[in-house]
Image (cartoon, rainbow, N blue to C red; front, side, top):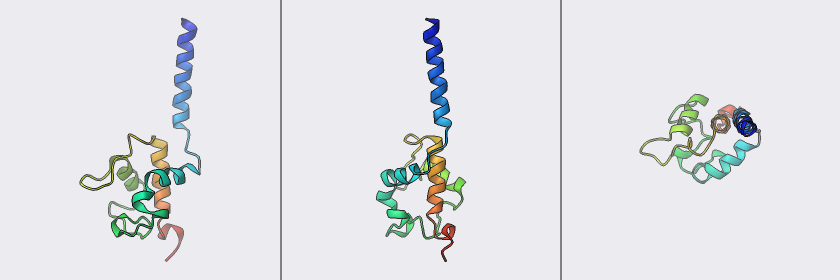
Amino acid sequence: MQRTRRNVAGAAAVAALLAAVSVRAEEPAKIYVAKCQACHGVDGQSPFPDLSLNDDKWIHGNTVANITKVIEEGVPGKAMISFKPQLTKPEIDAMAKYVRGLSKKSKGAK
């Protein structure tokens, strides 16, 4: 019985550690394709100006913190849903950085 409790506690500790590990570099791109591309287009190039992520027009703010908030909370009254139930905190943080990186300005283009 005591051994089982230790195994459960150990498994819980390992799960917590894995959740805290940063997201691998290729994962944000895969998440983007699966969850964002349908609305925001390939590489953020939506034909709809309000949905484009690469034109440097950021309706809800252009910082990683602003983007994180939109991913976590969604945008009430718009099609942008909250992804907090679907993504872990490390995935959301990685996605915010990835999305910010789609901007022409962040890539050095003019």
